[in-house]
Each structure stands twice: as C-alpha cells, then as structure tokens.
Image (cartoon, rainbow, N blue to C red; front, side, top):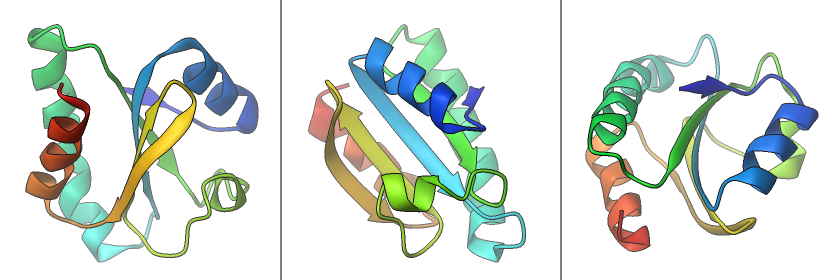
Length: 107
C-alpha cells in the first residue's frame, strides 16, 4: 500500500492510475484505528487477486492539504477515484462498506 505524504505524491498516484481508493485517517482517531488494519488486509487481498486498483493511505495529520483537495470533514473517509474523477466518498469504520465501493467500480 502506498502512503501518500504530500500533494506531489497524491497527484502522481491519481494521474497515473485509472482506479484509486484512498483511505484518509487521523493518528488519534479511534474509528480510524479500527479500520486501518482491515484496509491493509484488503490491499493485500486485492494484490493477490491482481485487481486493477491502487489502494493508498493518507495520514491527514501529516498532509493537511488533503482536507481541501478532497473536501474532507469527518474521519475515517474513503474516496474512490476513477480516471481522475471522484466517484464516491464515504465516512465509515466498517470495511464491508469499503468493499461495497469496489463493487461500484466492478473490481
């Protein structure tokens, strides 16, 4: 899983991949701590299945500008991007909700 730390890395990922799912969380956010390891497991699963999607993680404490870029208000939040366009964005600590986003993209 790619950890995005700044706007340049964000732009590189979004501009060079057709399907991107970005998890944004805070260091001291209890729901973020719940879902983060499950998101990492999902990334590993999708890699073994050779799915056409890149999963990324942003620690918002380290990259505050992302709040403006993705219009973030609550955490944790997952943003599904296809061909540089935001298709969906959900606030959840349930990995099942995140998997539903992938069905939307037919991954």
